Length: 294
Image (tube, rainbow, N blue to C red; front, side, top):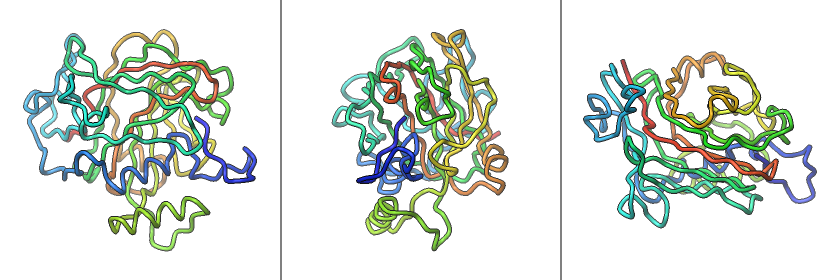
């Protein structure tokens, strides 16, 4: 995904707030809050598995959250008009990227295992964000399902700015940086605006779990735009496309390994399908996003 440019700045000068997954846009959406639902504390949504919360299971692939003592669902999807507010799934917020005109289309559709989110990018990019308030030590595991139906048309190295298109991303944003942390230009203004609105600061860092075209599963690297965004390849390649996969990540362990310190509180989750760099198309389905505890 391409990042926005400052007036008069060249592509080589895109600052870290122009990161893929629009870390700034994520931060603003999460720090200023989803319009349609406030963040819920983890202890307010503890359940005995997804079935207890009415979240559909995985069918032939096995139930998500099976064996988990506690489950914190992240914005469960509901099919039909009742599950939408202003065309956006209830509990989620549109994350629009500065400088990117064409947005990804998101809607909720019915599937064999229940309602799922469908994302279609046609040469564009945008995301959906949902605020979360929990400690990774309490809910260390992030689980979700995804099904990439069309991989992004990427020919450049996916670790480069020109190749930074992914058919599916699940991004976890973590708590605010230490007081006095410097940030340039637009980011500083956006951060100040968010802080002024809610007395909150923007997330310190984020981990993007991606479904790649060429990069090998297990690859980890920093975003080509900012060291504050760590990229982790969870699935990859055409053989993995066209079917559902259940994923589970220990976000506390991932953060510790990637950033060299204990994970702060989780501030939110974003889903994103984008195809703005290559100008092609990508399509993915997402479902059953949740944090779990053993």
